[in-house]
Amino acid sequence: MSEVTAPSAVRPRATGRPWTGARIVGTLLICLWSALGLGIVWLLIADFDPEMIAKYLPRIFYGVWVTAEIVVLSVLFGALISLPVAVGRLSYNPVAGVIAFAYSYFFRGTPLLMQLFFLYYTLPQLVPAFNIQSRFLAAWIAFSLNVAAYLAEIIRAAIQSIDKGQLEASTALGLTHSQAMRLVIIPQAYRRMIPPICNEFVMVLKDTSLVSIIALTDLTYQTKIIASNKASALVYIPAMIIYLIITGVFTVIFNRLEKRLSIYE
Image (cartoon, rainbow, N blue to C red; front, top):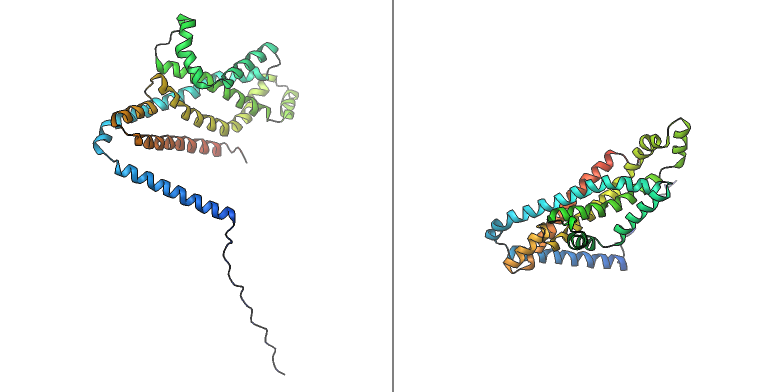
């Protein structure tokens, strides 16, 4: 009896991924951005001047230091101001609620540049006693007040995101409302604040370029001086790269803090 051999399996012919419209557009965008990046690198290499770098590098470092000072101090003091504003927004007291809402509405509803102009130029004319001579102090106060309004909304939303049952359970165990907020609700809420606070931190970092308009010697102002002295606008490209590096550093710090607090476990 002859053996019946099974027919040999025919391997299907390998087919490549189809060139869909999305794939074509994506490939074109990658090529476009690659060409743009290579062009920027070529311009920087062609315009490379070691003497110019040695001359202006201290100014760049000083501008970076001023920018970092404004960001860190504004966020820290803004956080201190934002907590009572957030509590006022959550308060059942109508007076506290109206004051907190008015504060938040004003500083979130008007441009930061206008607030800076008002504090540095307009307020001294209205109230001579509040004549702020220091540009850094004016920028610090304006940014702190603005940041506080946004952080207050972040804190309020984070507190409201906690299940109300936990507050009820805490009060049922004998804790007062303030104790329950301090010991139970806020420790959970601040973990949820980290991602939006990181985003606010990055926004403040980019907004610091506005202080150059009142001649505060931050990174943007120093870059403008170098560009005018060198008669070349290419110096704005390294300044943008520096902003990206600073943003990346702070983003990594906040991401590690977020993982350490195990927000999304």
